[in-house]
Image (cartoon, rainbow, N blue to C red):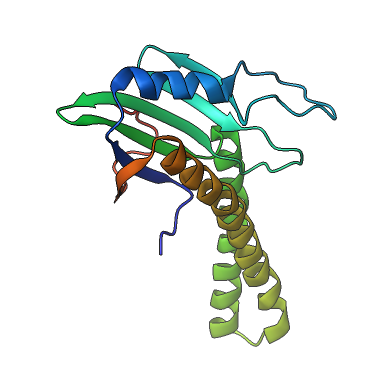
Length: 175
């Protein structure tokens, strides 16, 4: 199981480079910041510049953990490959690090108090529970959407092979 809301994958397809780019253009519309009660005509919003794209899924509900999807299309001998990274928005990551850090430190402080003196055992469950809830919300909200996007891109590019890749640097650009 992956413990961070960050994913990298490589989709290998028999489609030509131009066909992959055309299919991307068919599913991406320009980004709009306010979508009040309006769904898009296409499933993703964002941009594509030459062989690089950066998109996010258009959803009819709020999910702060919606993945930013960055990708590069590269020609191969028999088709092409699409390298994709997914991660939440940077401000969301920063907020969750601060929140999880605060409640994690509170829980560790409680453990210190529990060992060094007599403290009510129930009090420690509050920061511990908040940490588990926050982490579960962070990871679950991200995975809920990333699974949908991975399936969508596999089908869109008629994937011949999909290679899940490990973590290198979550903030580097693909390519």
